[in-house]
Image (cartoon, rainbow, N blue to C red; front, side, top):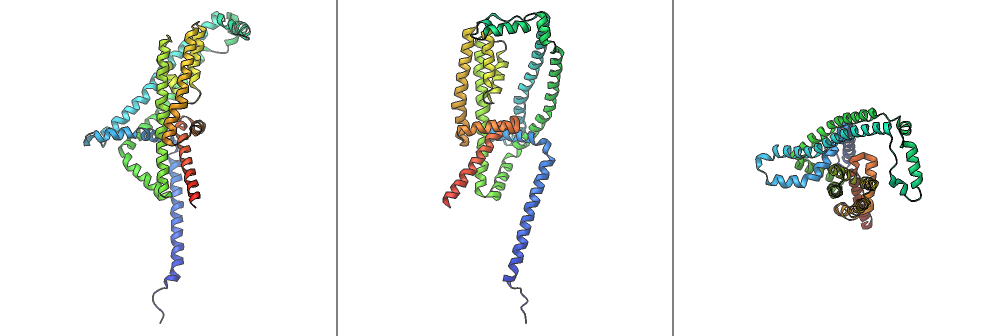
Length: 365
């Protein structure tokens, strides 16, 4: 009589095919769900990305405070306090910038109206510039030197337009407040559940590509922290140093100019626009020594920060050479905007980690 049991050899191919089909189906289903989730939350991806960058960068400090906080604070109170502190640190400068923008816009509007009525003769120092000084002096006077010339040159500039533009900028800043609010909300949950989420992310990376996935994840985290330290902290230092220099030479409102210098210092090659403009203004007022001093001091601060401190912080922790740091920063800005300042070097760090892993495995093979 035939055996009631099936031959295992005849049963394995079907089971293997069924198992492979189910595995492939699960992968396809997971990818579809992931794509659907990204599409559903696409309007909040920028806020979530900002929250993730802030949480990763500040996590060592948060973890240190959490280890010393009482048990009753660790669940909600400490994450809430830390989120509020981050919120004040972000909202404070933005509010100050909005107020100053309104004040400067009103001053600029009155200044343009005054020029159109009475003209603006060329300063005498313009005529002393070698080679092109006389041409600049005559061109300035023919365009702005008299009320008629100024009216003809600046007649299309309506001072009221500047005020309307300022209101438009203010409205846009209020709309961006929604992004900031959701960023802080996401940040609270990241602080509250950060440890569990971190373990899940490492487990996912390990199951997806093996132990090397954990290394990639660690490279990304190191790159984010190093980029924040190298960009934000160093830029704050540059802004403080140059702000003090502005105050020493008697510049009006050195705090605003120092803050603007620090913000632009995060983007390569933009900080000289500020201290270079200050130098030109001082030279125009006849303070030649102060103008040269500000320019040289700013150049030295920028050179040391961009060529020694910042590459050491970013490249040393993220294992990125200076060229790749610069490429990741500029490419990130081009691709992702301001968020790309931090995402660009992170992507480059992960890419180089994958490259070195591939080269290492190829040599072993």
